[in-house]
Length: 345
Image 1 (cartoon, rainbow, N blue to C red):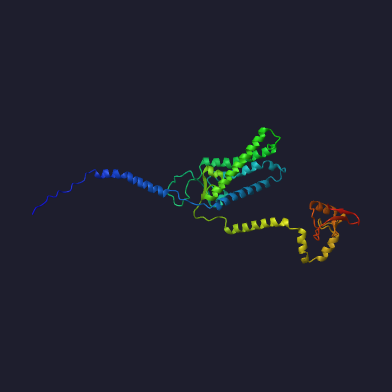
Image 2 (cartoon, rainbow, N blue to C red; image 1 turned 90 degrees about the vertical axis):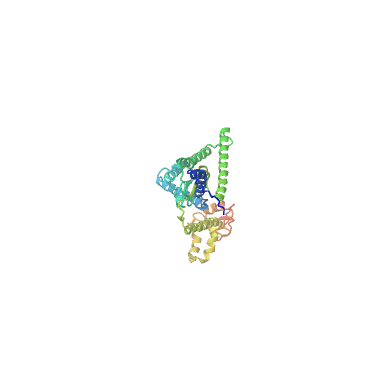
């Protein structure tokens, strides 16, 4: 029987594992870096457009309330004095809101009620772990300053420029060519700004980011301040407000179309004091409810009015109807005479 000589395995070199480690280290580093980047990538979030629009509306209402209280302080001063400095007053209030909210890394009152805050969208690389997609640094000092310059200084300068150009009548054809060109330039700038704002509004409704041009230019995005916080304004309150607003708008639309005399005649059968109303017809003018000093009769119904009351109503309304019987008034007749007719036309 033949035997084969089996050589024992050779031991690996002492530095073989070191060469293998250095060979695989770049691959491990690239894999770990890609995993960390995918883990820390920004989570796509959707911020309610209604919340953002409501926040802007609440800020406007807050500014109006502050302005109303400030005007009451100067109510005893010369009338019309604050009207001359209305632009400065608005700029001062906007500056106060900016100083005590955005400058100190706090949201404005409307933004706080909607559980929102500003985030710097230019800081693409997140710092630390991303869990909800709402993480991110606030606005930088430069963004805060530019926000103040645009919202406070820009609006103030534009309001003053418009009032000055209107006072100087730059738009009149009799003005100098330079003033006329400046007026046309102002109108074109305003038109371009409105067109750009409308385009930004369409983009905002589609993407839900950046309500206005200032936020888009500064890359200041509104995100939720807390992921588990509900809206501070309840839906029950909002529903009541919507119902009341719609009801008030309906009344403002219908009341001018209704004639007070026709409503009075419609409700006259339900009146309890009919005797007093009949005696009142003979002694008082139905417009001013006083005894006529110069009594005139409305023809053809022959109800008695004051001359000035009836004359002014007929002159203001060609199709004036009698306040008592709703019959069209075609002429006027002095109560003491029979043959003196005065057509209302």
